[in-house]
Amino acid sequence: MPASLTYPAAMPTLDTAFAQLDLIRQPEMADEPLQAFDAADEYLLAHLHEQGLNADSRVLLLNDGFGALACSLAPHCRVTSSGDSHLGFLALQKNLARNGLAPESVRFVPANETPDGPFDWVLLRVPKTLALLEEQLIRLHGQLAPGARVIAGAMIKHLPRSAGELMERYIGPLQASLAVKKARLLTATPADKPAPTSPYPTRYQLDKPALELVNHANVFCREGLDIGTRAFLPHLPKTLTHQRVADLGCGNGVLAIAFALANPQAELTLVDESYMAVQSAAENWHAALGERPATFRAADGLADQPKDSLDLVLCNPPFHQQQVVGDFLAWRMFQQARAALVTGGELWIVGNRHLGYHAKLKRLFRGVEQVAATPKFVVLRATK
Image (cartoon, rainbow, N blue to C red; front, side):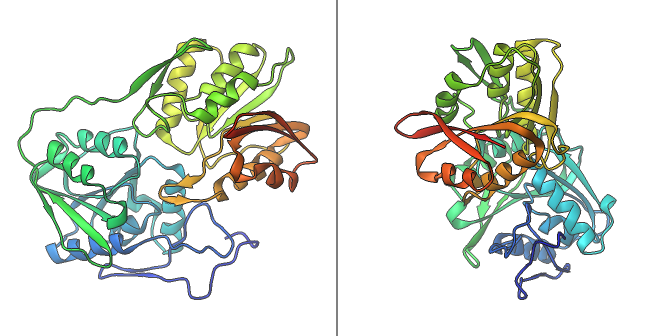
């Protein structure tokens, strides 16, 4: 753990019939106020223990936030974990090591790939994006062993009725549990159903520049261009010189692609923590720009980018991580951008006016200017 980060002395452990675990979230934050598990994780594990588990049981975990389920079950059965968050994958790796578990004790499959069954149990945490849940349920077709059970866990405040409806549609009859510590389980019994057709990826058209954009299930604003990016696009910088540019939090890649079309000598890197976003960005890039070289990376932002290696960073920063809202991810992205930029390099961002990014950027950069504004958004340029 980095020396600059400290954790409260009484940080709770996950104590279940399977294990007692010391778990951390990703990204790591000083004086982290949130724990890496919740009552829904505890409920899922308690239920699974009651049902019985043996070393040959094949368990698939979907959207296991920071690895609480995987680390609990790894010593007791054959575990595959799948999710769309690279930060979640990093948390799984760190938490396995933190609790003395071998990295190979859990097989990880990015959400843009199909886990290879058959599975006896599927434990899933209901994601914020129900399109991701739908795609994951569709991919379970043909991957369930006879007698398998699919069990979803969620805190009641984050459990929409439509989640159960999706489970019934794609898996089979549903039974809801009683609430325990404000958490609930939904158990689906697999029924014989025809192979479903996925509605994903979705596509939409953009006029300026003229693009058709592919969006896999967990991409932000999958049905149309988000209003922040719409405010940003007309003001992207233009240059005739070679520049090394990163689209940080690239989503479907629209900012990078629009910039690349207007700046033919630029060298682009597209980075996102969502595997489905990076897949979408790569497909959109190749559709718009053919074989023009670019780098696509699912990563913890620019954490692995060499220092002083970029001339320009473009960013439409997120303001939430799953159901947790805040500017901690944006602040971290600003810090990463500063470290990766050369002296004189620039970070261009779009953000809601009320988030006050102008003041935050002034703490990191020697110059911050407003490039454009709408009633809701501002486009800012910060110079290192």
